[in-house]
Image (cartoon, rainbow, N blue to C red; front, side):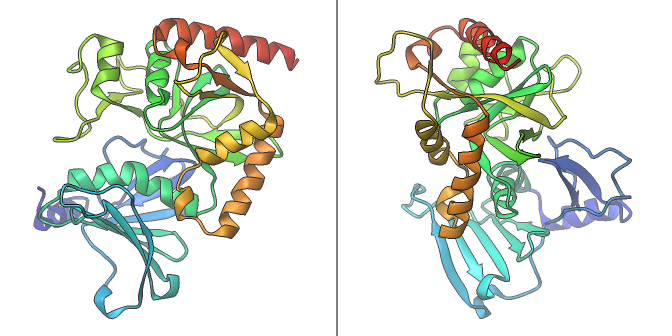
Length: 347
């Protein structure tokens, strides 16, 4: 664990200089370095004001026990002691959101979603805190700021983004990593943030890594030890992107060329791909929207409307499961051929 006096020394060593990062189209300013994120171009920082300021090793100067707390969300996942792995509280009628993990790590977000604090207990560490931050916490923050997000991964095909959607374990990250090994640049993994630019939907670039389970690493590289863990004692491994010798990362905001989702493994199918109706496509995307269980009725209605517009302008295709569990190279080649056919028909 990294003690708080180490954090203070790290802050002092910066001589007051903050770290700036470009993630999901936003400019983040942090008091500590955030490994794994793309540093913002010097033309953006410090000339541009940050969209979000991150304060690690501290919480808002207040005693939460003396405030009005309302439980907004309880995770259905339990830790080894039977406690919910995550709880989210609304503080003082929405002045703050308090995001609490079972290991004592917690984050606070202000009402305007422009400041994010993170702290941890003796049971956790700075490394754990960063793993929560660069993932579910940023995903939730992005969604609260009004950006619709999908549980998905995205890969760049020239000047268009191809999105792979599906529930946990469907193969999103594995497919993105397979494309990365073939030289395609990855836009985002696990969280795909969408933006509508004049009825043309785009994917916002995330951070240069793909998180993979050991079985996927074995499938891709022949050994589960071929990649390092994201952090000690965590199950997932890290495929770093954009560095010398590593697969490429796509930092541009790209229009979406097509969306592919992984079908039910229990259903037999004759062909690799299948076109679906707009209604089925909409229901699929709604079911795979990010942070959906935390949203209120108004936010869900807005999300439904945006996704309805998305499926009306972007092709949505189903990848039938018996094809995507056998040969990743064959799947990548089949997706390329299928997308080429879609792209050609649009011209």
